[in-house]
Image (cartoon, rainbow, N blue to C red; front, side):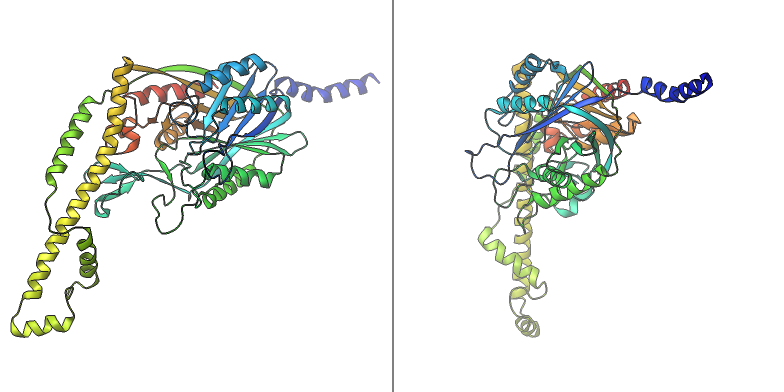
Length: 500
């Protein structure tokens, strides 16, 4: 009898030992609240704030995602939003302010002015609905809904693809920047196996718009809808914006068909679903949170502004008078493109004059071709002036802000979160895609994600190399940072990922 009891006890030992070493059971709750400003104009689809609360035995983490352009500084959400929300969350739920992560999708939808109150409503509902969950993570792939908007030119300069100005002449373009096709996915399941929520991290500006022109959550709003409709009414999809600073929707400058974010969003949603279905969720999970400050140097753009103003004057000096105006140029250029040999009249007229030695048409054509070329050269100068002046205004704005602040540095928040096997590091600026690609590669972490647009907003944050191009593209012009900022952030991000 004693021998039987001993054998039974020995059989139980492995399971007891594993239980002691395993991660603990986590609780999670999630909620969605509509924040669409329906008084601001037509609405195509709703904007949401979503809150996910994850709790371990000793701490809780709050993830807030917003269908909004930014958290502070620009758009409807003001700079007091995050301090107010964090303070109230600490009072009501005991969640430390530094354990609250707020990420903006960067869609350009218009949210309600009482978005802070609505955020707290979502957090309350999420906190009250917490239940035991299982956690899993994995990667998805989406290659075809986005493109890098920075174009490399023969001159060595870089320009970007925006609606604010024209594209450069095709013959000047020699290359484009990279994209990041990876989708970081965290799947959270209930104990019965149903999907509680999905967090997905991807790099792309959701600014495609919709044919109606109405208020929209854009690409990522449609993607989340696809995920939720396929995984059931009790599943919530939360998009966390990645390093999308220089990533446009595919065919962003299309003019021959309506701009429509829905097909792109549907495609992204399906790609997330493919990843979700491959993820196994573990019974227990791990929750770790780090929040550190980082002091970064602000950029002094006075020399670059001086150089661009000289370039601006040089371009103005390059403009030449021409006999043509738009009304005469358009039919003339069409005529000479239609028939290079006989543009001014029918072929028999040219052939008839050839017999008699009359060169009137030939001389007219030579003159018109010079006029066309002169007009086109002026157009190209005008287009470059438009680009330069638009970006010069951004540089001047941030240089004025530097002088007004009297501060040569800025302190930012860098957060690190571990949920199960997944690790996320954050930054409050519009990180360019090269930064995300590089940090993922250097970290050597299998599930490392990078989230920009988080816990505040400090405009664009390009690489050191990209900032040497200041004035050529929006990313390097709409920036308050000195080029030396990036190595400081990279070191901090890698350190945080390692500590998680």
